[in-house]
Length: 359
Image (spheres, rainbow, N blue to C red):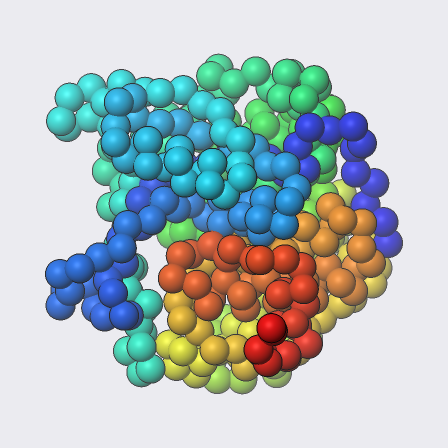
């Protein structure tokens, strides 16, 4: 199967996102018992894009910043260091109780102690993302984009961001850009907006070319029946997840690729990690294999980034899921919540199970 990508584009991948700050304790310690923390720039969508940008393909980020904020400067510097172009307005803070970049506080857990994540999104400047601040005809029509990756996190963040993602999807379709949509369900974002968001997600799914979720996203966003997520034997549920994807395809037949990751948590540092993908009428799968985890946050984003990179490179579908699986596994070995691959070989070595020293 071959996905026909638009040629002559300035950007291989474009991601709309709300940039924030990630604070993590040293050495996997719990937040409440720590006094020294690492500060990172973060967003799920740039986690995806990092695989593509670190491996040398051009990426653009659409976002918003707080005007004059040192944290906005920190974030911009980080995006440049990852090789990403970015565009978006600088929004006035509006005083000490105004806008700011969201804060994600997380420890990675250790052994039998599971990770804990605390999101503080009050006053989040990314909630103001608005289509009027971006020239979509220039971005998609003149600059050109091969794949735009949309996330349910941004689509559900606020009524403004919901409309923003819809307009981006419509503009992408108009100009021949392929649309990737990771449903990324978050219950707290959907509370009180269930009917509105279900309708909006359904519209994007109806025009998307690549649909991605974890074990629960398709069920919770689209009301599509599937097996119970989690548990101690995820491999036994693979056929149930295939059936779920078949039901997704029946409702949203425009897509060419449907994929979901599979995860069984043995401990904070040992997971069984797998994936299944339907490309056209061809199934590809990675039976769950053990991976060793430093920090699990960002593993799913790494999978998506690796899969999109493989598609952009024009590889065969078998390699899409393999490279995605290995990119996700790579992401869990970093203290950042995004992978920073040195090269393709590093990722393929993970797929091959080759952790020997390279000299």
